[in-house]
Image (tube, rainbow, N blue to C red; front, side, top):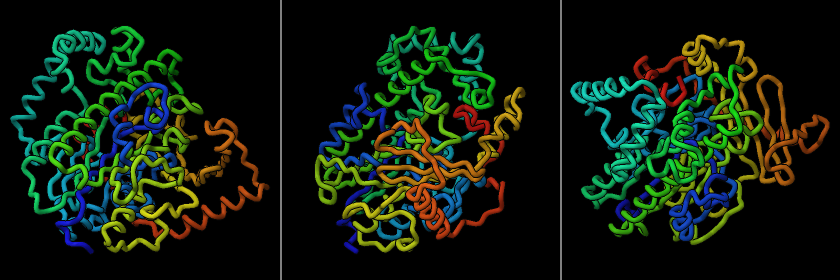
Length: 488
């Protein structure tokens, strides 16, 4: 391998719940990503990039390891990454890199083992170990004051008035992007320039609840302040339990606020881009922008990110700027996956990867070698149990049709979905990209060939063995914090 000092820096950015088709960079009708579009003119943009899983913990672990969830073991049954030596951070650290992570999601934290290999790990801009009782007490007092305001809608009206009077300060009211940018900027100014760095940033925007900072809340939203406040209640739990429905007006409002979140984060990405240029690091750095998964807005009856593997949820953006490897202003139609990033980076750095022959991630440094993409998710029994515990009018029986493992196998042209309950679906993506018509026919030779290929692929896996139901690091307090994200 090259001497580490001569190796490029690596900045890997993953964005929570970002579906590719809501970026103007990917042809969306609203201009949600002008800065990312400018960035893409010097980068390669992958049109057919897919995640390895449909939720954050499993997906991020696949991004960091190059492995599918079955093999790395961070699944709905086990919220922990056990094999820290498999992390890209660990591998790069052993090869002379300084490694640092900035995360805004508790699924990506020291509580889940994903801090493995990082010399420095920050949650919402701060080292997790520095949060003392005094700070927690102050935050508790502030929260108690806010709780005294009568209702969520009233709170929102108060926030809008305050934010309209001080728009600059309003831009600090987000899901961690501001604190992350401030921490990353400060670190960049003080880092040891004798070592290349691997920095991973995981942004929480545009995860639900969709509430971008003012004035991005008003960028696309067509309703009133009162209507906006009503949309702060996004009850996907009771929706899936069959206890409520979303109106067309609600769905439209959710999408408009979701797009505002994307536009806000795009502006933050532009500021990172400018920082790298100002410090003469842009051309020395491989910059990767992707997402852990997408989001559903009613397609085929699904919302949020659970229980399915349809395109809005598993097709993600993937844009890489490093012209020395990938050229400039390239639009690639090749099929790739986010767990291909590890072998691609390691091949470029001439570092051996021990899973290269194991049908896991595949390097696309010299063009994708993939014929198909695989995405998998496990039975969401545990998340359903938490939802039922939280909502007394919900019963496990309400969710029985969602309690199954699912895998999808797709080429550029077609897609097969197989559930552990025996349910199977097949879609012609060229003629039916919205997956409106299920064409599954067990007698079809092409479909049978895809089923066989999927079975053989999964059959080659060496499953990661864990005690089912064990959740090291995720205690009651952590689950309380996860309630705001809808996971508990």
